[in-house]
Image (tube, rainbow, N blue to C red; front, top):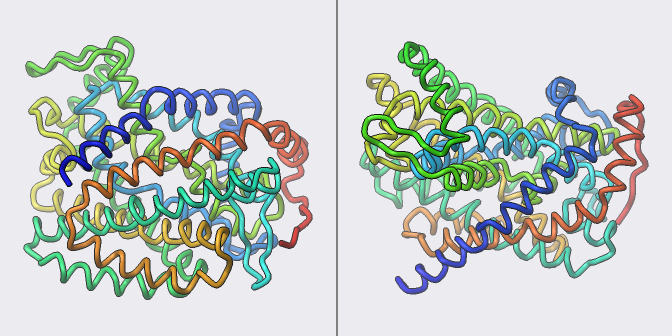
Length: 451
């Protein structure tokens, strides 16, 4: 088993190596140009995203689609992932993580646009869409759609389920002494209550949970920055300077070279916001929206909140605390930073991690379900949901380093067929953007298609 874990870890490092990172970041930059720098519409995107009424055909509101996507993306990557990036790449990694989020807005916009354009209404009346349908109906390569769906289904049980459940159970045991099986039972029951009701039930919970968890966590970060406000100017200067020099000498700590600074910042940014991986477009396709560009704008605001706001403020808090110079890494580093708020700090962090992780389980359940439905049809939905609940319980009580590495591999490989569709259909992205966004027709209704 130990040998398998080492092999899987090595393959994971290879998959998430320079070729994939360059491909993802290059796509971000290229689509930023092709979309006419769609980032300039982020204010309009945020305004539209808060609308909860039905604005067109679909299963859930645009806000519900956004919060469900955020539920899956705002998770341990925003807390533990940022700490890992700073510990391995130095303070400058925060800048590269932030830039990845800024440029990733264009990719999230593009993949959501295609997901809505090529979505279908199934025989049971539900919306279905995502990269698998884009690859089949837009690119004309169903085998690529099946490949993407298979990778998504595997990733869902790993990175979106078992390793998340394990994170919660381990945290509860370490912090409060609660047995892992007890946490597993509670978590499995809560998960069943939510996901057995389908996407509408998931969206309702996420609409309430995601804003609460995000606001609570950000407020905690702001309080930390207020407490340590005297050092903020020096912290900002350190982050900016080390981003382009790769050196950060502070408290006897010598930061990584510029190559490592860029690598860890970009990798953690991409992994956190999932722009280009093709997961979020699956739920974007279920949104009640008038046209593809309208929902694409809403989806793009998810990357803004995830990386440009949450990851950035986490990075500043960690660097400003000075704890990153002690050699502590991962969740322990973030926990040390939050300890500056006596008593309340660790509690805020614990609640943040618990809600972030639980919401990820909910969001990824829908991704995996729709991927399975694409391959096997609607008959697989109910069994899939029960298997998902059982996996939550299993993940809570097992040690899962091998599962984590395998999930990392399939999660990274998901990006390849999705990026193929984005690059092949870039002219469609431009045409739809011109028709609805550039020509100010965001209220126009787009035609609906049947499966």
